Structure formats: C-alpha cells, structure tokens
Image (cartoon, rainbow, N blue to C red; front, side, top):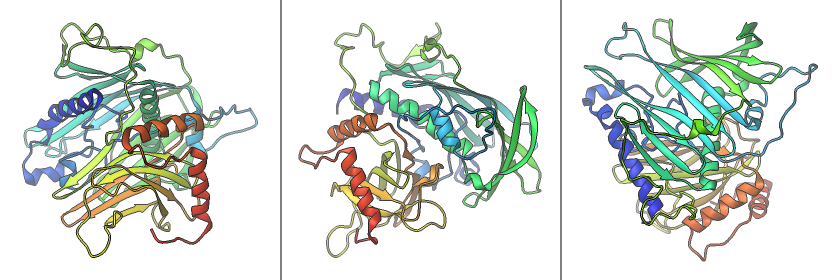
Length: 467
C-alpha cells in the first residue's frame, strides 16, 4: 500500500466514523432515514446533493460519489438578439470559469412531521481549473429526533481538507495537480447533472416571466417522479435568457395529501465572478484539532513529489458475497464512453467465466441496451475493467443516469451511475495514461484517445456482436 492509498483509506475511516452515529437506528426505523446521506469520503459530494436510496446492504457499506473530468468548452457570448432557453444548459455551465452556489436544505423530523424544518445552509464554490469548496451534510433520524453533522471540504490545488464542523477536527492530505483538476470538474459536473438536469429538459414547461434579484427571468417547472421511493418532486428554475444560466432553483416535495413542502432552495447562483484563492484554503481555528500531523515541515515529507492519481474506487457497493467498484467514466463522443469498474468473482457456471454476468449497463429509460466491448478485461475479482459503452440509438443525455450500472447478486442488488464526463482531449490523454499506469499491468495493451474513438466508431457501425 503506498502513502496515497493510506491517506485515502484513513480519510474513509474518519468520515465513516464521523457519520457512524447517524446509522445507529433500529431495523424498523431504517426505512425512514432521510435520503440525504453524506459521503463516506471527503472526495466530492457537492452541496445539497441528494443521494438516491439504495438497498440496505449497499447503504451500509458505501455512499454514492459522483466524479467528473475537466472540460475545455467554448465560451458562449449571447447577443441582444438571442435569448437562451434550457437547451444546451450543460455546455453553457461547463464553459464558466468560476461558480458560487448558496442555498438551504430543509431537514424534517420523520417522527414529528408537523415540526418545522431545520434549515441547513449549503455552499458550493468552484474556481477552475483546480480549486473547490463545498459543504457536506449527514442526517440521521431516530425516535430521539434529527441529528445533523456538518463538514466542509476544501481543495486549494495542492491539498484537500475535510473540516468536521461539529467536532472541530480536520484532516488534510496532499493532492496532485491532475487529481485536483479532476475533482474540481467532478464538483461542477455532478452538481449540474444532479440538481439542474434531473430529467430531460423536454419535460420542463415554461410557466411565466418574472423578475428575480433584479433580473428578468423565464421560470420553468418540472415534476419529477421517482418510483423507487414513491416520491414526486417539483423543480422550479429561474433562467436568465440573456446568459442561458439559472439564477435561482427551488425543489419542493409533494406529500401524500397533495400539499408540498420545501426540500431545498438555491437563492444564489453566480458564475464568472472573482473568487480569491484564499477562499479555498483552510486555516484551522485555534480550537480545531488536527487528526494527522501537519504536512509542511513534517520529517521525511517531500513537497516536490507529485502525488499519484487516485485510482481507488470512487463509488462502491456490497452485499453478502457480491460487490463492485466504480472509478470514472469518460465521454469519448456524444454516443460513446469509457467506463472503468471492478467486481467480485461471478457465480460458478459451466464454461468460461463471464465477467458481465449479472451486470447491466443502461443509457436511459426505454432506450435500447447499449453496446459493450472490452478495452481491458482484468479476468480477476476486484481488478479494474475498462469497458467501451456506446448508445446505439443516439447521444447520451446530460443527466446522471446517462449511463447506469446495475449488479444483481443472489442476495444483493446494487445500482449506480457511470456518468460519462467531458474532458479536453489533451487532459483526457494525461488522465488515461496516469490511470493505466496506476491500475493496469505493464503488459496491458495501450490505447490512445484516437484509437479508443476509432474503436467506438466501429462499435456503432455493425449490429451488436457477442460480448
């Protein structure tokens, strides 16, 4: 185990322990635990991100992490003659250089639904290419009431810090330039996909035009039904038609009696604003305790050594004898992506081991199954597989479920996202090279980005072949 892996695992243990009291509820109460479960790592969980409820076995072992890759997009300069709608919202958001989102989460007591909500401030700051800061909130429900644990995650481009607000403790680890850039983009792309593009934009309807914070906005609404948890959410978004970007967002839950209650609200969404570098640096208050020795001046520390790319699972799930891990997914084109994942040993069967048995990739509801080809097949449990996934019927969506992953075991079902993430070609080449060096054997075939795209084009030419 190298030092970086040790840092990451220590970070896992710290956050798992930090949020552990929130999981100490009786079996009959677990189904009432609120969907917002804070991350079990300090990697990237954007402020206000709602985590889908998963099977209990999966919830007990992992939190859903969403990660993304850097983007080089062309800045759009609107003119007075052009008014933007919701179309191409992701591309416009990915083009901005800084983002500040502030809002409030509303936390309710499941045992006292008539009680007023606890309002928890949330914040999400990004300064491209390699700086971010966001809140992380864990919520536990029991008959004794609601317990909320707050933390703040910082990345200044060289270090990542988890500051546990309630316990007044913090933990800092070094971070490489490539990793910092990757996690910065993770924050942006996950936040946009999860909060601003829940369903297809075709499902939104324009309600009215009104002024918000001094800006004339088009107001759109969408009703989002999640059958898994039998919940309907109304999303209302205020869009500035001169920039094509949202300035206000409200999420309301529809209750059984047809009334609504506020779930979360973002009352500031600012882009391309000056953000001082000091905002992303953590300076511990005098009463905060460091959980590890300081990096600067530490005996044996070498600040000139670039930490390697983190190739530990970004998302994982487990139950009984089945488990999986997800790393990043890379968008190669509007219809093809590279998905990197691992799994437990398949169930015994006659013939060769099928490493895709009980695994399903999908690209959206009611769409044909995507095409799959191995770029690298590990042929071993818990080793990284590289899969080429292509949508046969058209482009991926820009939502979190653009590519979904499902693993079914005898007593386990895990669901996850393999969100295909945009990246500038030059940066993507660096990421792939670093990933291959960190996770593949030396004799594994090398595939350039151009070669991967050529394989993707061939994959879409012919009818699906055997896996």
